[in-house]
Length: 327
Ligand code: PBG
Image (cartoon, rainbow, N blue to C red):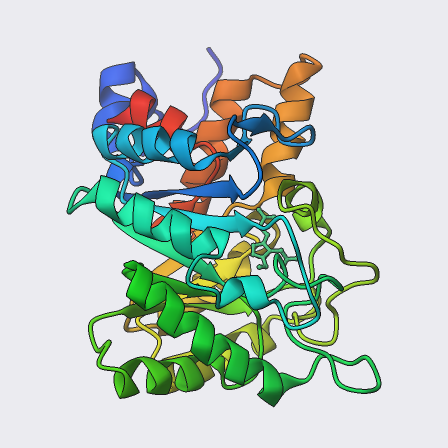
């Protein structure tokens, strides 16, 4: 052996055995911090597979019941419901119809879940409009911010009435948190909480979701969702949503925006969540199907990274699988 100073400080000591690594892990995934997104389709009696999201289905009302029961027994923190209606129109009437698919699904899920987990609903018009935008359009075909807020207020009341405990405001309209809070409080729903998709970016990673909800969108959402280039603006959106009364903030997508997530987690005095979106799921599933990456390790690493960056909870299509593996 040649003569040179040997390291005194050896970080490898804490990596030496599985038991040591387990003991010194800084981040752990726990089932209580996982939320499973669920798609519920109006005109089906059987669950239907989604091509671009292998392993994920559009549920029927019946299979939704089972999914909620399973999620509760797996110890998940919650489920987030998305509706896939049979008919759509310009203002997204199905979203405020008390018998609309999302409101029906919410009633069923809330009854099934009891106190075992938190039933949450997506509050956005895109699944319900025939043009596929997250709001209503003005005469020039642009998304009309304030007219959309009126629709969101009605939608919030329908969802609160159906038993949703946490409304996921994903539309990225200015002032949506304050508008919905005011509508809820005005109707006595002081206890219904708001999850604000504070920093939501116009992302290519929503691709498979469009199939999942049969989206009618042509074009994109760049006039309301954020430009992926902007970090400071993510903080601005988060600050506004906090001031408007958001109970929880969300950053979405997760993997390409971990810096924004970390910034928001630093600033926020309410919980901060992240949404690991459909394209993040599809990407890992597709690479694993080719044998190009170790699927289970990649799934685990991707969610660990999101938690490490500062998320208190994660919406992920792997919630059930992860809960089974991590407890
Ligand atoms: C809008 C909404 C979208 C997603 C969740 N809510 C699509 C979009 O904004 O274009 C995407 C979720 C995913 O990709 O998994 N209501």
